[in-house]
Length: 300
Image (tube, rainbow, N blue to C red; front, side, top):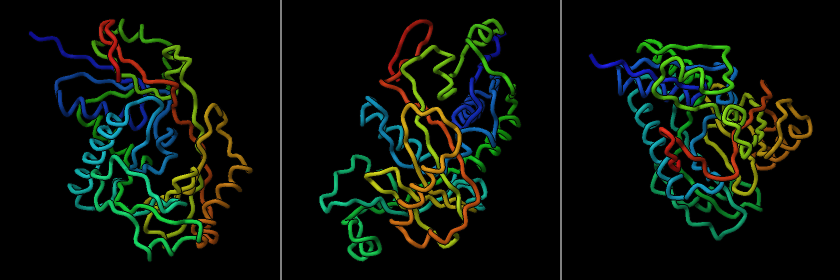
């Protein structure tokens, strides 16, 4: 009789939960357990707007990042287009603009991925302050962690997945001792301690959620960390990208700066009431990480 495959997922955020669900969908007979010290609504994914756009990570090759981005976009598309009530699960199409202060727009390597990618028209550019000279329009996908995470976790459990909470691991040894044949590390910034990876660092992000139902498109400033990202019930205004900053406290200085930058780009947001201030720590790393399988390292 073939032994049942035991898989441990370390980390119960959006990545860990999605990995656990995908494994059970692919290998229904597997025994999959998620170990985590935090669950929704207390994960970094619950803070984020869930905006799809390619992000280049340290020394990760552009072609590889674009490939990951395309796979993610197609997967989110499949969720949007198979859901009879769009947006109920927090995944929905949203059009918008990335704006530039130069008429010489950069060539975008991933322009073939999102729906409707094109340069902004002159009339679209004229909607913005005079310093904005051009930009790109495309249809992105929002995957709101606050809505999507509970749904993914519910599906994971219904397929037989187990969840162990309030468990902060200090090493993988205990999992190996429990007979887990595969361990998937989805700890994000927690990998710094778990894996003794001193090359990892936090990238602090601060955002402010406002009520602005008139905002039906997203905005992204190409030169700063300024953005306006509509979710289903609020609009996320940001942000910061502070390497090495471990603070999870809301900064009044950052808040004033964010609101100034956002309202300079789109003035009507100045009247939007703030409903939440939040901070999350994204994981960063000095160089590309390696994976290990039976002691054999492979680039990720």
